[in-house]
Image 1 (cartoon, helix red, strand yellow):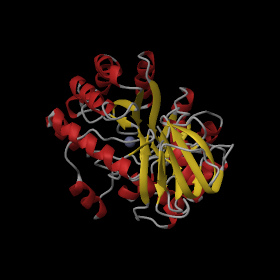
Image 2 (cartoon, protein in one colour):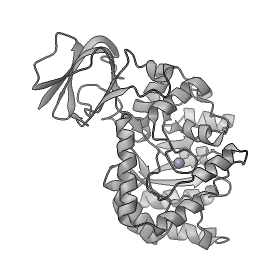
Image 3 (cartoon, helix red, strand yellow):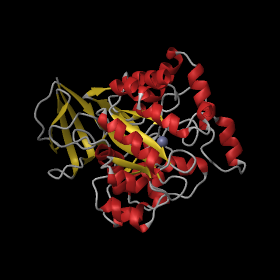
Length: 382
Ligand SMILES: [Zn+2]
């Protein structure tokens, strides 16, 4: 079945052949982009959608989200907004609630958040485990995540759980052993929170190398709360992405610029913890590939909105609207090592967002306004 999206005011393809087309049309066929070009020249299709002069963009690629959890931490947020600093310590609250939840309760949350993101234009989403922190709870977190997305990440090394206090190396051995064995069948990626108070460089390296031996690809939570070894470890191991990148040295920036590791920035976390934003301009000017993602999680960034993150990146991180849109789509695809999403070139997956605005610039220009009119996922209107 083919589908014509007609009457497009601005078509942003992120494809070198097409670039940005005005007064355009797009044809999708069998779940793929089949044709792009001027209105009136499009080939016949089985059905059509009228974009009504609105902009059309690739679906957002959210390459960093934590959707498998129970409960929320609204009270912690209120306390933080009243002046308490964010330390990451509240993760234990969510771990306890997640362990106590049934499969059906966890599944309902994953499905609800996945659809919440889809309604806002996110057609590809990465989902991490990391609130189970036992062998069965990490395995079921990934099994439930895998039901709604192929981009699943084993984050057994999120924090050292309370029952392993003072025995972090014993916990790392579990993460690299029995827990990995049970988690790997449901995961594409392995991740670690490399930060003071979580896992140091040697522990992080051990986790990522064990994951790699099990066939998982590495990515890292790096340099979020302070300077540290995370970014350089990501580059050393050829990780697809170093995520957060808020506190970077010159050496960190140089290492990223000389690598294939994407810097994934998560401005929802700085917004929700009232922290300084990462310096996106410095990274872009150095030639680093930058992605934007939500970090959707109940503690430090409980938003599933890629448009919000894009607007924050423009307003607070000095990205241009075009750079921010690229980073929220094609950049996220790079961070997931995907070449079939994040753009609308011929053969790309038919993941398309029709905006209720004449240009994609409005995503940053009109923050907080629900501008997503239609979402097509695999060529199907959702
Ligand atoms: Zn995260």
